[in-house]
Length: 451
Picture 1 (spheres, rainbow, N blue to C red):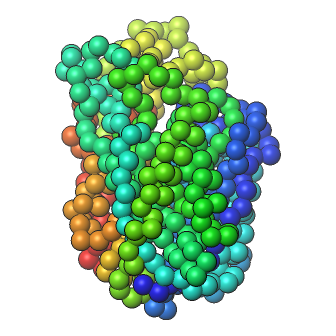
Picture 2 (picture 1 turned 180 degrees about the horizontal axis):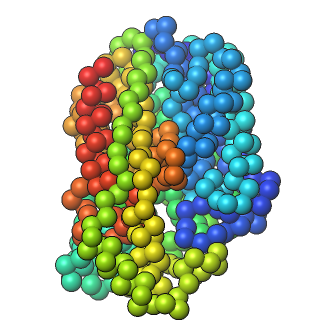
Picture 3 (picture 1 turned 120 degrees about the horizontal axis):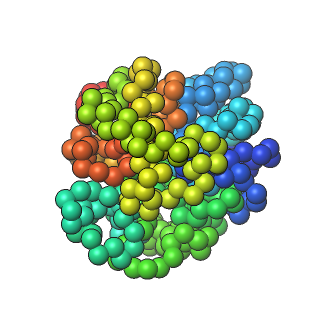
């Protein structure tokens, strides 16, 4: 498939004090371990245009999305706007928290301006290339992080070598679909979709996590000026922790191990990628409206009882969650119990209805890039890839567009059957969306697939 394309990228390392994202406590950044970016790809084929903007950030909230929209309007780009641009994030937990109450407004303005610069650069000169596609797989770093325990409940991250683990609750998806654009110089663009969490480091250093190591390993082996766009698949219930070992997997060496490992798996097959057939690309969108998380009266009563049981525990002060860990959640410590009870009662008061925007970029009749919002469980991505687009090469990107709209900074999207079993992804603190949201998203994608 013949296609024209352009590439742009900008550094988005923070300058002002701001917390890093993805944990219960504030972690003010104190150093840059490696650079974070915003990358833009502009595409044209068959007279139609589409673009992808990807941030090395935890998520895309509605404030960042609207800020990018405003910056794109200022550019007056002839063929690109928010209507045909998919915005997504790599979900790195070592990037500025755009939901923070410290300097997030300033950082959002900065990041949005950089995104517009990157797309302007990408759109300024489109050059011809040919689109290729294919698949590889790598199961070495991927684990379903929710486990059935001997007591009949499910725990998230139950701890390494925990003797009470029975088996994983759900699936994994080790397949890595890829699209690439090649010119006479070689590969200029490689888009991958990998199902894994980008949460391997901890601490207070800025980093793009394993996708950064993967990019920095692959790009020098491609043509000059090439770009790797590492889309993150549906991985809300997936991470890199192998509970059958006692290996330390929260270090800066871990993203290098994973990123370079993925790069090796990709490099072994990219010479075998096949030309994508068909002509033209199209970009379609569909809005999905959901509801706030349903709170059962019994849940609310239990939460109120927990709040009353531990009157001396303060879960609202800024420093209160500094020592809260996933192990505390698994053990059900008094602080963890009250912390989640407090958030459940706050969620019970929420009335803002979440809205999501799905974006579909189709390449002829052979390939598609499909967005999902926030942190969907792996089975949702598998349904889109293996059922809805079973006859096409399908690349999923999670954290696509905005994560629920006003009042929603992100959250997990479990399958309907995951509720009531345990694990913090299904709690109102970590998931403010209706329990029917996964089904609504899948139904929305069935409609989009018909276009």
